[in-house]
Amino acid sequence: MKKGKIALIGFRATGKSLVGKILAMKTHWPLVDMDKELIASLGQDIDSYVRTYGWESFREAESKLLHALAERERLVVSTGGGVIERTVNREKLKEQFFVVWLRASPETIHARLLQDPETGANRPPLTHLPMENEIEEVLRRRAPLYEEIADLILDTDDASPEELVSRIILSAASS
Image (tube, rainbow, N blue to C red):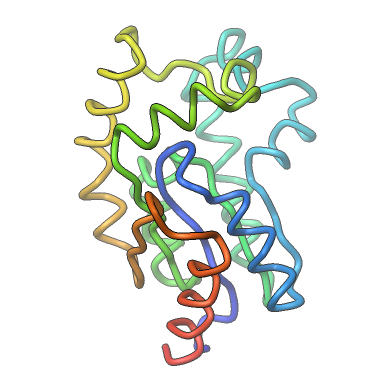
């Protein structure tokens, strides 16, 4: 693999954290879950931080973390869903990482978010829309950005995490 690190991108609840854990175990590379790293470094959950300091401040902290991670080698990174909103982040991901877009349908994302106990504290609303409408609206805006930098696109609706990891390892090895 030319780039020596793998970044998992995609909307909330598409499997980035779970696939990242399994991928890190299979590759024997460390996993960095960017949202968890940010929660630890910011000293509060994402919802509280965003309510206090705003999305722009959060995105700045996210960018700094991504750029620090880009300096490391042999690493699996599970990104936050909105990391691709900044051009500088997309450029850094594309040039420094083998980028895997984990994609799911709006219906699958909605069902997963409703089942996930972390949704409230670590996944604050991105708009003032109801959840179903927010998912569709944000996906419409972000999908072209995910696609622009993805080296591999995998649909996670009906695939097991283990199957996804196998496909990532095969594709990354031949890149």
